[in-house]
Length: 329
Image 1 (cartoon, one colour):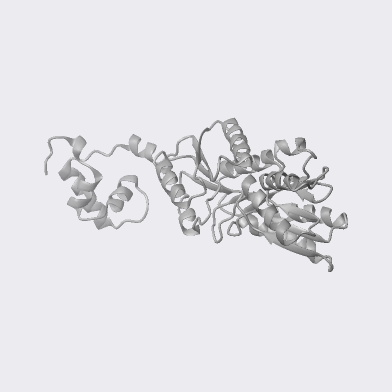
Image 2 (image 1 turned 120 degrees about the horizontal axis):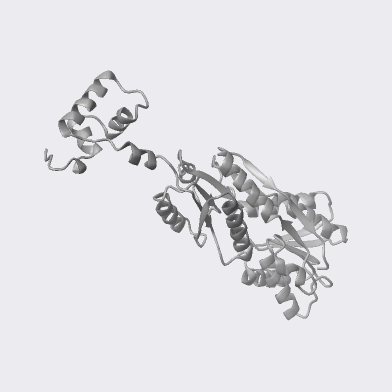
């Protein structure tokens, strides 16, 4: 073996000479785990033979995380996601950590590539708004001894990673109840991707409210969860259900698109057809008429995420309040 420089000798060289695995050498050097007396003897003999020097300071640094918290969101063009990301950054920095922010465009492959790169920096925590089609097996293996993982806003089935999200079901239940209280009997739910967990929870809230009455007719029109999707879904709804009296929208952006389309058809939102959103964006109170919506407290959500990071919580679903705000629409 070339011994011109001890610096060039690695743990892999020791493992090869000792005839054991790299992990066995690592365990012997750290004094951790269960290794046989024979394995220890082989490793120590190989260290003497190769002249390997164990850098305990460097090893200690490798075993620690950085003070960096990565916030990975699915769509930074969505106003609510942007607001949530900024709020999370503020709360995380208040803990004394630094932050980095990445958007995946709701693409699972991009998400995998981005997080693989972030892992190289041994981040303190990964706060992830999971992309559509995120696999639980991939998500579960992200947590390490130095990196905490928390998902937000969207659950991944069979994942053991702790998740923080608004009470989607109860929020939409409250909103639908408000429409029923007006005596509306022809109600539609519009917008949203049926694959997403938050969509399932919100449509469950819608259906649960309708179950309490027996003379209600309801319809569902899926679309992308943005302004354009709201326009398309509202157009389909009017074409197929001209008698519709009110619509519960997947989110406020869908509601904005629905309102625009209603006005183009010569209809007055809130008078001819009731419209309710979800997330209560800042602009919703300035709509004409002001948009009724389900308010999700981003500060509460961010505080809950930070508590999980600090306390190194292992699993569980943590729901924050989703409160219906009645305005004029």
